[in-house]
Amino acid sequence: MKIVTLVNLYAVTMLLLALGGASIAIWTANRAEFFNQRITLAHSSYELHLQLEANTYQLFKQYGDAMLIGDRDQGTGEAELIGRIRQNISDIRRIIGEEIELVGEEEIEELALLSRMELKIDDLIVQFEAVIADSTPESLSRNWFGLSAILDDDIDRDFRAMIDDALAEELEEVSETREDAAAHMAFANRMTYGFAVLAIAFTLVALWSYRGQITGPLARLIAGVRRFASGRFDAPIGITGRNEIAEVGQVLDDMAVQVEARTRSLTDQNTELERAVQARTNELERLLGEARTSEANRRQLLADVSHELRTPLTIIQGESDIALRGGEKSAQEYRDALVRARDAAAHTARLVDDLLFISRKEAGAARLTLEPLDLRALLADTVGMINADVPVLSDIAGALVTGDPVRLRQSIIALLQNARVHGGPEIVTRLDPTPLGFRIAVEDNGPGMSDADKEQAFERFFRGSNVAANYAIGAGLGLPVVRSIAEAHGGTARLEDRPGGGTVAVIEVPSRPVLKAVS
Image (cartoon, rainbow, N blue to C red; front, side, top):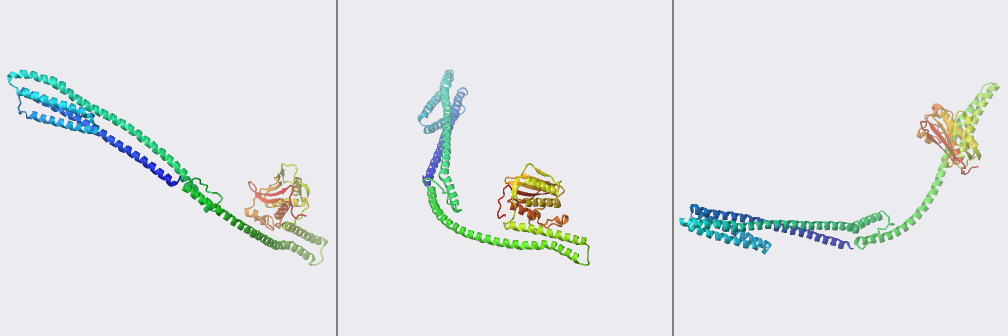
């Protein structure tokens, strides 16, 4: 259904409901006015009948007084009362006429009763006038009996009965009118509740229809347009129906399909171009990085070797100069000088060997002598050789790996020496299994290392901030050699903080390392 048609249907229905509610309100107000007017007329008629009764009895009393004590005012009081009675009858007749106009001919009976009442009053007035006119002493007794008959029969019985009928009629009319008003109000309330329920039901249906026909599709349309604006054309809006929103959604979906096809084509072409450029760029960056790394390694190696070899060469030269300077020396002095020169040469050889191993590992040509070995036995033997008091903690009976026992022993010795020199007095070694192999950990309870020192500890010739106070001989190649040996075996090496204080040096070695460029 078209939105314009739906909105027009809503408007017409709401207009009909509004007109129906207004009609009920106007009809109820008119009926209430009718009932109020009818009750008011009945009350007015009731009061006028009471006035008529009072004036009539007052007139009859005046006639009685005139017969007993004489007519002192020459009939003025009686004439005034008769005028009031005429006026009361006229007012009652007018009100009955208004009631006839209001409710119809059902009030004609009241008009007939009023006429009989008027005739009765006129007849009584004529009788009283005749009695008063014959007021000679000899007729007084006879007239007195006639007056008693008038009072007993005509007034107390006939006139009183008419007045009572008229008052009862007015009271009954008031009661009936109130019952009719109550019935009308109940009916009006039912009609009002019915219209209210109908209006609520229509409102709910209108809201549900509006949500399904307009709000929901419009929200999906906005969401779809936002997706298109962000460049996502793969998800269509998917609005179904025959209204204007569905037509707009279908047009946008068709446009999105065309834009998506063109965008995909351009994207594919751009991706291919970027892939080719990126591949060429990566190749150039790799070559440039390798060149820079090779040059930096070469310069750094030359600088490191020059720096570290200066001290032992200086010692050898100094010992040689001392041995040659002066006169003849004893054989023991020459022996001591040669021993010191030999120690310096041995230190130089170890330093050169470590540097060569690190450089070959960085170049991917580390030389290892691989053979099957038990890592637990190697660890226990190495610890016992360095410090038999250091415990070896492990829950495994054996740890078979393929590795270079000399280099692995060198790594364990370097970690133990670092822990002894830079750590605390309590040193513990652990051997634990890992998913790929085994983990060797050397723990100490020393002061630990800062994060900055842990990051640089594996750099060549780096010596921590606490080395100067504890140890002044090392060259700073222990941990770099350890990492190179671990990585040459396909493992890793790192430093961790020990819970409670201290440092944990860790080597992880796979059971069967995948080696590259290893001879």
